[in-house]
Image 1 (cartoon, one colour):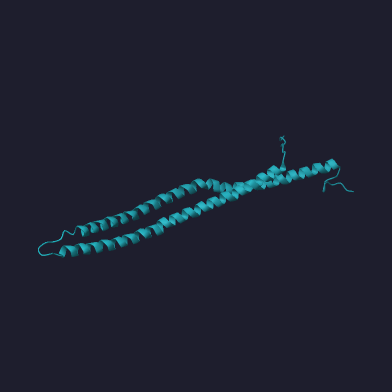
Image 2 (cartoon, rainbow, N blue to C red):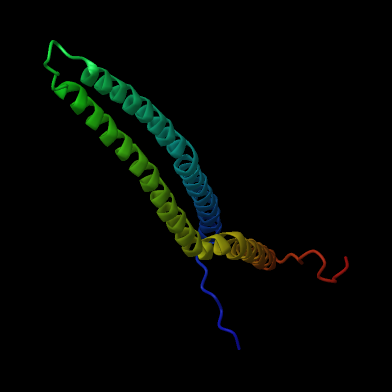
Length: 176
């Protein structure tokens, strides 16, 4: 024999149902926001960031070429029998080469970070799948159960009131 429930407030069940519905909406919205933001971040890393560093590499190649021309021009100059040391031009050329190397490394770093971010996103999605399944399957079933429970309890209360008043409930089979 089933034990009877000790329900003290049907309104509390209805309130819990509303809170569960709010939680479902907020959690689904949060999951969607995280998905969108992670997708945008990955698109930025794989697209815009790589493009930015490739443009930087092109500018650095231009700087290396310009500083090499300036260095060669300086080395070809001579004042009498003296050749200038061209230290400023040499340092500018070396700095341009360092910047070029750094920009080329940045492209590799961005590719590595994109792979790491993609892996982290995949890990997150795997872990969040349980919550997503619960939100899309279990919560709607629970909400339906709560609706049926509240309806049954309301019917039970109405029946108890009618019996206390001496009225017959509609559809009980008694005819006047």
